[in-house]
Image 1 (cartoon, rainbow, N blue to C red):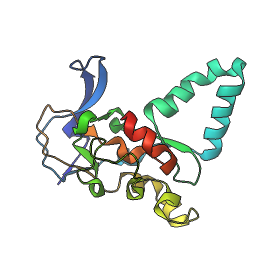
Image 2 (image 1 turned 90 degrees about the horizontal axis):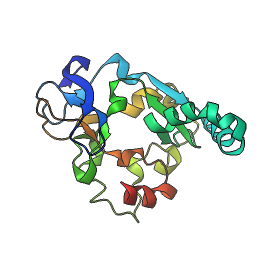
Image 3 (image 1 turned 30 degrees about the vertical axis):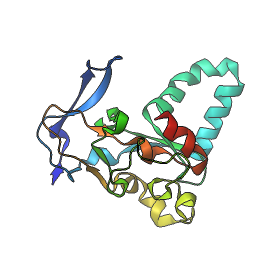
Image 4 (image 1 turned 60 degrees about the vertical axis):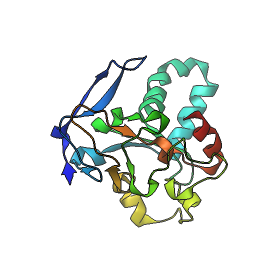
Length: 193
């Protein structure tokens, strides 16, 4: 079953120690449901070249760092770092889903179907799971694939489902394991989650 934008709301979650925005269900949503909306595939993409230039200028040129701070914060605060194009790049989901929080302590209820029940609690920090990665090289795919390049946005959300039954009023919580882009980052990021 598929649910659209009208089935969700973004609001402050006052139950956390530091109040933050979150995505909440307005209706009951069964497990294995999808979120479908044209807004879901409209991503802001920061190419590897853009990430490299912004990062270098932010780190090396104090006089422009203040001006770049909002862009840097937007790119990494609301976005996801990935190596989909072979080098570090980033994208920001421009839909309401950008406010989806991580389900800490294995409480996620949204993610990729192929993740199954793997969470930061059950994942082995020393055993990288390439099938969860957006990184083409890590999955063994060619980084030069025009079909994948043209369909990048759909690929990013393809397979995203609710992994548990969600009741109206519940927060939708993502499994951030799938955001780990490289084997080099795996151990650190699993431990940090």
